[in-house]
Image 1 (cartoon, rainbow, N blue to C red):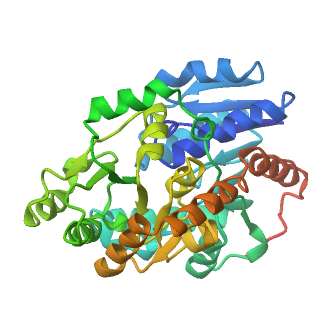
Image 2 (cartoon, helix red, strand yellow):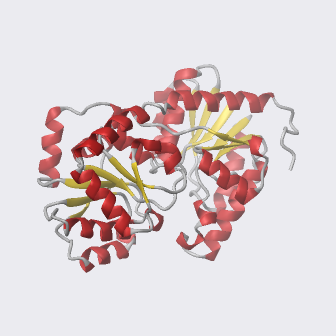
Length: 378
């Protein structure tokens, strides 16, 4: 069996974490199958590091482009791929072999206002529709996302399989003592701070978070800092305007991208981790914070109650007042902090990349053993 995996988004937030752990665990559990990775030229050495049964093929077609609709199927046919795994929602209709697609969420369909325009929405919806129809199996990362897929695309429920995400190993290891002092000095983190980690996109709800943070400071926390870690901050000027509207330019820090090692330290230094997102397919950052022993405040919508359970304080993300009240509770109630820290450490241990990828591997085998007509007729 020769399996092709699209690894072009290896370094992305979210999907990149999924791909890296998928490949790492496949290399651990399967040394017999030949894996062909479609990747960027800079990542061709990844296959060699994984093992002799992994091989890299350079694919330069941009993600979410018309060219990938042609070039990816050509690469798969040239490499004689038996099964193709698209770890995000793009599955070109010309793919000739068996296929599995991972759809992490349905945000582009459920929140079209966050896309650049109608053309982007049309492309996303058509691509998702094609993927759900063409794939032999659809993987997703939570029961909430599965429900969204079934509601939006009307596919058989048995075709959609939930395989949870898990935590990267670096966040499970306590950093060296000197790393904490180095991070405090580098980022000038003298005062207590609240931490957010994730993409900087409208559905992450950061403007309401800034409003809530201002309310918290007015309740006796004048020295508190809000640290925001994420990429593409310059694209969302509304965040800067919110900071200046509340005169918080000295108290809200935008750090941009940081390395996983540094992030592991910052999780542990934070007084509270806050994640007010309006929609998530899974939500890795809150789990990473829990694994670091930091109490978590999260929104109570989409997949987050399912993933976090009672190990986080859940609030209404549409209410800055509720976010502020939650932060105040976690900053002042030591008993609540201790309870959530203990629950969070236990909850983080419930998720395993090894277990999830073993299930993915089983699905690879099942799909290849099925009759070509497939068990899920439209």
